[in-house]
Structure formats: structure tokens, C-alpha cells
Length: 173
Length: 427
Ligand code: SF4
Image (cartoon, rainbow over all chains, first blue to last red):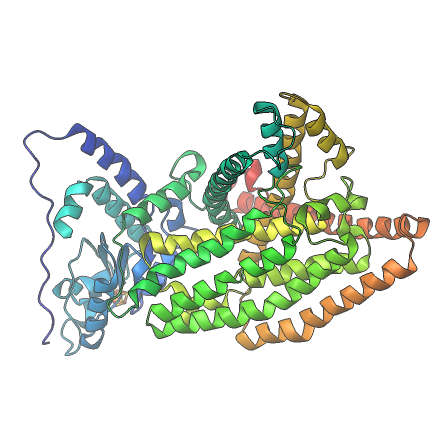
């Protein structure tokens, strides 16, 4: 695939020698609000999508955590790559990822998105979505249970809570 | 607000004749700014929590929980959403028309917010009591069409453009049944001023316009239906139909600009409920207290008058309760009904709503001619309509109870223990 290159993760800057107490506190508060409103994109390419839909349902209600689905990538913070990514689809996934505004997070859901899964030997399947976009969390399973996806969302929230928000934005821009 | 400004001029500056005093415009300007700030604060405080209410109601209807992590029972969810969207990257697509793209949310917001000028919140709590109030509401909310179409066009995306055009078609068509069902009120009250319309009714239910005769009763439901369509709410949310248009006119908007659209939508929810309330449900009228008495209280009291403040607060509370109840019903409608198709939408408007509103107008005119106001027959009809209205409310409560019982039984079967809902989740 004459695809785009692997994107570099934006790492937060080194902690300053004297941590600024005010910004740290503000970071904590902002992150608490930020993590409570992770809107995810309605995006599914294969059977894992069924489990993704299920996760929004009554049993493992993602809305409890403030996570609602948005159908436009411009308004979402979290891309859940649910399903097999073919080479044809790879460009679109990449495009969707680029359309999302910063800060954004990615969960690779299911074996297919992690490494190609069942279809690893296939001529047309990307062996892992991390070959085209940066991935924050890998969620194993074929398909992963809704509970597992719920756990992944909580992990994303933990990651958001730990971020030095002010510095991250400075680097990203 | 004008009356309150005159009161301030009289009592703080000791000027009896506000018209000839050279500095009265300063006081008026101050009151205007004050009223604007108050109204914006009100919209923000209303639009935030009502998103949480809506998501909890949706959760209850889908037997989920809804947001419950931020604050007590998730009540601060709206703060989280707002802050997160503020902190998101402000993204304008390369292909977009930048000035128009930026202007569109402001137009939508202005159109919605302009209507707050004439909404009568209480006996003297109205920013400006225009004598063309209803016409003004209909006119200023048309700015929204401009904003939506502009958003669709400037985004330079086919989905956004479809969404914008659809919403234009929808808003322009549904303007007509809305205006016609408001005509019914204008005929009955004989005025376009919002405060005068409230004054033409009374505090008790039999004095409300909705129970005046069968045609006003019908007009109330027609008004609510067509203002649902004007506010792009489900079942008329075609401009945002996810299955067809991804996200509609706001597809390219991110962060705070997108939130402006949402904000306008929630503000519109209040406007819709407020119009229904002050036109048909008696507005802020306090049962047993005539509006003239409140006026007299303001005129008589040199200095601070607690009874006047108390009556203002009471009238605002009555108005807010009625309007919130309508908002609640609209939210429930949103999560229970499926979306219409485009052709069904247009058929519903032109073949059913418009003729029915015309019939309402004719009917109200005929009733006004044939049945003398305040006669025995008049009160008989009002009583009959109140029985029908009461039956509807009773049906609503009964269905809520049935649903609760069903949920309780299945919970007991599944979990083997009693279910307990907090009271606010019962309906
Ligand atoms: S991981 Fe399994 S369930 Fe998920 S898309 Fe691949 S084959 Fe389907």
C-alpha cells in the first residue's frame, strides 16, 4: 500500500523543575470535565460494530459516563475502530481520523483492528489499524464483549485525567 | 421592564414625568442591558440542565440510566459537555467559506435569542411589551432559516447543503400553520401584544384560551405540532437525519461553534413551550389575583414593596412550571416517535395542518358570533373542554403508572428484589 506514513505521537513536554501548582490543579479540574464528555464516532466496518452498538444499550450504558455517539467526526473525541480494515477502507479511516479535531483518542477494537485477526493472511486486509493511525488502546477479542469496550472507555478516561492539558495543546498547535 | 424603569425614575430620582426628564434614556438603556444579561443568563441556565434532563428521560425510555457520573446523579453533565467543547480545537475546513462559516451560528443564535425580548415571564417581567409581539416572534425567528442555510452552504459539503436546504423548506412551510394557529389567539384576545394576550385570559383553567372552545383546543395541539417542526425536533428532525445526512447542516462544525447550534435548539425548546403557555395556558396569571391589582401595587408603592416582589416571583414560578411541563412533554415525544420522511413531512403540513388551522380560525369566529361571552352556554363548553383536557392529563399519568408497574414486575422477575426508582425517574 502506498499509504501515508506512520504518524508520530505527540508526547507531552517534560515536567518543569518547579511544577506550577495552579496549572496542575486547573489541569485536574479541566480533565475531570473533559473525561466526562467523551463523544465517540459512529464508525463500524465489520462485525465488531454490532458489539459497539450493543455497548450503547441498556446493559453497558456508555451514556452513564457522558459518552454519546456523534455521527460527524468533527464533533467526536474518540474513534473506536470496530472491525476489519481493508486497504480500500484504510484511506477513509485515515481521512476520518484527520477530520477529527484535537484532542482525539483511538481505540482499536477487536483482533482485526489490532493485528488483522482472522484475516491476517488475506491479500486485502490491513494487519492492524496502527499501521495507518496512532492507537491509544488495543482491545483484544473476536469480538470483545461490551463490558470490555466499557473498560476501554474507562481506560481512555484515565488517560485523559492524567494528561497535562495545557502543555499538550501547546505542543500540538 | 418599562414600568419598572418608570418606577425607578420616580422613586430613585424623584421625577414624576419620565417622558420629559432629559436623563430617562440612561435609565432605559441601563434596564435594556440588564434585561439582556438576565435573558442570556436564563437561556444558559435553562439550556444546560435541560440537556441532562433530556438524556435522563431518554435513558428511562430506553431502560438505560443516562449520565450519572458528573455531580449528583450526573447533574453537572452539561458543564462537562460545555467545557469540553470549549477546549476542543476550533476547526474550520479549508474548503469552507470562512466568513459565512463563522457568521452562521451567530445568526441562528440571534434569531432564537431575539424572541426572548417579548416573552412574558411574569406580571411585569418582560423585556419589551411590543404591540406587535406575536408578529415580532414570527419574524425574528425567521433569521434561524438564514443561519441554517448559511451554515449548510458555507460548509462546502453536500450533506451540510442538503441539511440546510431541507431545514429551509421545512421552516418556511411550517411557519404557515404556526402563524395561523396563533391567529386564533389574536382573534380571541384582539391584540398582538404578548402581555395583553396573557391579560385577556385568567388564572383559573376555565379562563385559559385552550379550554375556551373545541377549536382553540385543537389549535393548541396544531401549534405545538408545527412548532416542533419549526424547531427541527424529532419527529421532524429531517435536517439532522443521521441515517441520511450524517449530521445535517452542522456536520462541519466542531467545538464551541457546534455548541451554539445546540444551544439555539434548547433555547428554542423554551420559546416553543413559552409561546404555548402564554397563548393558550394562561401564561403567568395567578389564580385569584387580577393583573390590575399587581399594576396598582407597583403604582401605589413609593419605595420597596415586598408584596409586589412576591407576586412577581409567584407569577414567574407559575409561568415556569407550565412551560417546563410542556418542555418535558416535548422531550418525551422526541424519544418515542420515529422520524417522518420528507414527503410525509410536506403532506402533513400542506394537506392536514394548514386546512385544520384554517378550520380553527373559522370555527373560532363562528363561536364568537353565535355564543355570547360569559353566558351559560359559554361556560358549559368551557367545562366540557376542561373535562377533555383533564382526561388527557389523566391518561398521561395512568400510562406513566402502567409503565412503572411493568418495569417493576420485570425487575422483580429478573433480579428477585424490589425495584426502587427515585421519584424523578417515575415519568
Ligand atoms: S475481530 Fe472478530 S468480530 Fe471483530 S471484526 Fe474482526 S472478525 Fe469480526
